[in-house]
Structure formats: structure tokens, C-alpha cells
Image 1 (tube, rainbow, N blue to C red):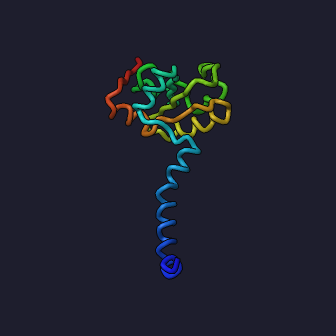
Image 2: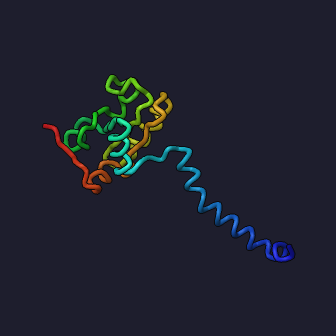
Image 3: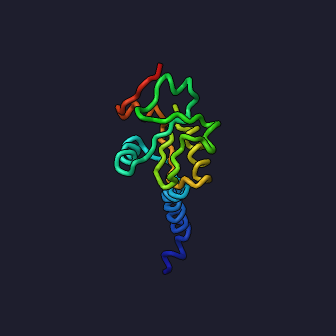
Length: 136
């Protein structure tokens, strides 16, 4: 007990450093930070997840993940291409992942609890050597 009292600054430093290590895990778990390409493919294949590209039509035409539906970010709310079953996992993708993250948050507010963004966007999808297609 004397050690703890005499070296209180060491105890405080240990608690602070432990908290700093755990903070990212606590924050990402509560916000649904997103999924990587491998986990996205598993959601699509195993849980019948739906891949939605929130890019603008011009961006979508230049290249998108194979099988993705195009719903531009500005039109996401109430779009007819959204699945009626809100329990299905939704994986949202855009070129960088930024718009997809905002779209996932918006869809979670609308009741799609399993909406998640693809971390790294289409770039990460390509880097994982997953199929990309272009439309004419």
C-alpha cells in the first residue's frame, strides 16, 4: 500500500495509458465504424447483405463494385431501391468511404440498424482484388 501512495503518479500514468489504448475500441464499437472488404463480402454472401454505392451516377459509371446498386448520397432517404427489409445488412460504398459513412449514419437513423460503410471505400475494394465493373 505504501508503494501505491508513494508512487501515485505511476498508477495514474498506467490508468491513463490503459484508457488511451481502450478508447478507440469503445468509440468504434458504439458508432458502427464500418467494415473492411473481406467482412463486407461475408455479409453479402452469408447474410444476404446489400451493396449500395452512394456515388454520383458519373462516378458509378466509371467503376463500381460488382453487383452494387447506385443510390446517390443526396437521394438516399426513402429511395425506392432500398430494401424493404430493414433487418438486412447494408454495405455502403463510395470512392473514399467518407460519403458512405455519412450515408450509413443516415440510414441507421431511418431504422436500417445493420447499415455500415466500407472502410476505405472503392479504393480498399480494389486493393483487396475484388471485382469492379464499369457501365457504358
